[in-house]
Amino acid sequence: MKNNVFLGAALASFCSLAFYITSTNHMANKTLKVYGNGQAPYSSQKTFSNKESKPESSNDENNLSLTTAKKSKPALAKVITNQLNNPVHAIQVSAVDLRSDDVFANVQNSSRPINVNNTMKLFLLIAYEKQVAQRHLNGSQTYTVKASDIKGSDALLAPNMGYSYTYLCQLMMNKNDNNAANILLNKIGKNQVNQIIKTSGAKNTKLLNDFHNEVVGTTTAQDLSLILKKLYQGKVINSASGNKVLGNMLNYPDKGLASQLTGTVYKISDKYSSAALVQSAGKTYVMTCVSHGTGFDFAKMGQTINDWFLKN
Image (cartoon, rainbow, N blue to C red; front, side, top):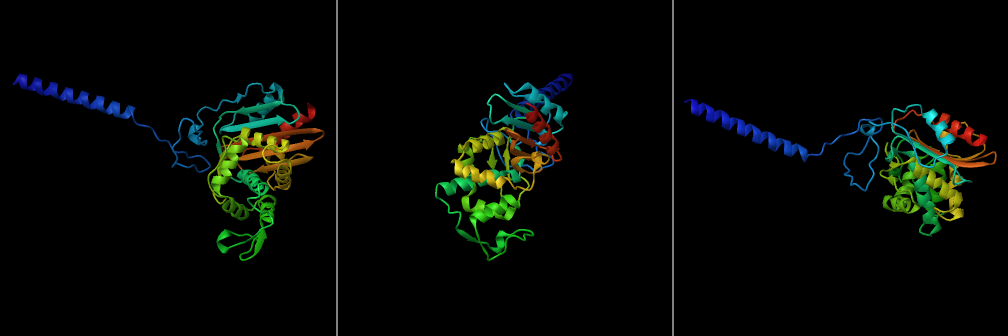
């Protein structure tokens, strides 16, 4: 009897050990899936390879220590860092002197692309101007607006009325009109826009959705700085087309970083990002900022960077 009890206990112990080992191996091969719950919605249907950057989400914000890129101008990086003041969200700031390759600063606590919305209109506009320059699209061509093209209240577009693509570009930028932006996007195509973004050198920028979505695409502060610098140098598209892009940025209504600035400022912004090319008092520079959280004081950061450039 005792032998039977002993044998039963030993068998039970062996089964328990086998189950434990099996469960441990199973868990070791499982991938933990974490879904963002930040202030902006995030796509949960995408699988990322090691070669592809992930859009920033609140769950990535577990290491918020600010870092400065190598060869950044220490004094410029310092004023940016002081202004950031221990951010609670992933954030990236870039400032580049367009008259001296040695004067720049990139400060961030995350290198991953961050979700943005209206700022993606800059990349759509570049794609449009490139299509026009290559004669794949005629800016004077008229598009007749359909009722399905208009979502929400829009006093600037009417169904069954014809508008040139040039006018739709102006409407998209000067009035921040999402309906006009989506008409242009449908004309060019999302894949084509992303191809042009890629060839422009903005490796961490991608258009994901149309402009009626909270998340339209992803980008980084350094990509935005690179694009503005290349536009200024005539390297994204030809100089004439690049100047048209910059010209459409002059009257963009959301000033962001440029809110407190004087001079000639080419800018685009939304609640997650801001980019500006500034020509003031003999200085020409670019400043960009991308923040995972809303409510960041872009105006104050822009004033801080502008003050530094004016004094140096």
